[in-house]
Structures are given as structure tokens and as C-alpha cells.
Amino acid sequence: MGNKVKALKPVILIALSIMILLSLLSGSAHAITGHYQIDSTSYVGIVVFFNAQQQPISYCSGTLISPTVILTAGHGTHGAAFAIACFDQGPFDYSFQNGQLSYYGNEPLHTGVPVTYPSYSLNVEAGTKAKDVLSVSDLGLVILDTPVQGVTKFATLPKVNFDDSLSVKTNLKVIGYGEQTTAPPANSLLTSLSGTLSRNSATVQLLSDHFAGSEHYIKCTTNPSHGRGGVSFGDSGGPVIYQTRNGHNILLAINAYLNNANGYGPSYHTRVDNPQVLNWINAFLGKERDRNSITIQS
Image (cartoon, one colour):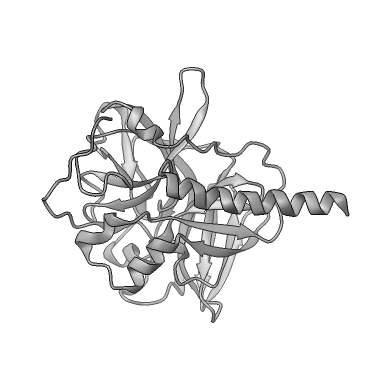
């Protein structure tokens, strides 16, 4: 994508976290916008986050990169005490009533521990301003208590700086979860919500990388013309997939921010190919391999 050029124009960004954004909606909204379809990518799931009082506080999409490690958004994992993940393609019904999560589907639920990318945590705790949002990688992991059964293929991580090899207008696939039909009161915990969710996908195009923060994010179009789609509320942490000529899928980035609450304009996606990010992720994958080897030896 060429040399990086820093843009001076400030950008107001809105996180795609369901807790933050549902209060801005009325009526219904699809997570993947424009020309979308039900997606069969089995390693993409939905992750619900809870605080220490066991209250649901947000949900994101997430991507399995191993049987027990989910990659998702840092603004979902930050401040969460534990998480529950599910890999139901949908459509399925759910509800949050009085702090209780009810899932009306047939797939197993998986509990796990959220971990936030260290520099993102520090930035948020220091009181991040809107213009500084793109200064660190918005990433988190969920370390599951037990391996996900039935998923045999996982997202492939990119090589270092792989995104820079792609040209503008490269077609990419974004994946995220479903439809929200009821919005909670503004500034409240996510305690009363119900609706239908499904794993949806759409095609987006890569835009210029000439903007502040392009070492941490890629920017895509959300223009629904020419069969394309985009991302919206609830898509945080869902993958951006690049398909090679031989049909191999690479996890290029994850969904993070929008320019406005209407879902129009460019969307921003956290790069996975940053060398510091890959080192951080691989450290957790290494711990999983060590744990598996110990289990086998015993």
C-alpha cells in the first residue's frame, strides 16, 4: 500500500461495541450493512462480556485463531471480568432480562477470560481523546476454559506488514453478527435486550492508507453500491478476510470503528499484521501449545 503519510485532519470515531452504540439507535439495525448474506465461516462467533457483578456489559464478534483463543476488539474485552462465546451461524433468538442471558439455540456456550492488548488498556485508562483513538491497536483476546469442539479450521494470521502489499480497491470480506431489534436506555448497562442474531458477511473495498494511525488500522469503504456492504453496530472484533488467488483466507484485520452512528462513510479495522501485535498474539498461542504438550505427556 506504499509509504505512510500522516493526515492532519482529525477524525471522530465511534466504536462498534453493542453497549456503546445501541443507545444511539431506534428501531432495528443489521450488523453487516448493504449487500450482506448469512455466512458459513465456522471459526467466527459472538462473544458476550460480563463485569465482576456478572452483568452483561457488551457483545462483540470474534475469530477463533486456535481451539481456545478468540481474537476480538479491545473495547469489548477492556473492563470485562469474563466472557461467553458461541459459534452459532443463526439466525437464533436471544434475550438479556434483569442481567440474565438467555440463548435460544442449539450450539454450546464457551466461557473464557478476556485479555486486552496492553497499550490499548493504558491508552483507555489514561482518558483517550477521539483524535487519539487510532494511536494504539484496539485488540483483545478471550482465552477459553475448554477447546471449541467441531471447528477444525481456524483463521490464518498474516505475515508482518502483509497489509502494505495490498493495493487500493482490493476486495475484502467483513464478517459480524446479526440484527438488534430493541435498544436499551442511553447510558445504561446492557440488562434488557432481545432480538435475533446471525453471522453475516459482505464485501468491502480497501481505501487509501494515507491517514493518521494507518500503522495500526486499515480503512475500508462502506458504500453499498456495486454489490458491496459494510459494518455497523455489533460487528466489533469480527474479521476482515483477504482471499489469496489460490483461495487461502488470511485474517487481515478486525472491525473496530465507524465515522458516524449511521453506518455511512469509511470504517476502520485494527491491523493484525503489526509486528508487536503478532508477537503478543503468538505469545498466547505459544502458551496454549505448551499446555497441550504438558497434557499429552501426562
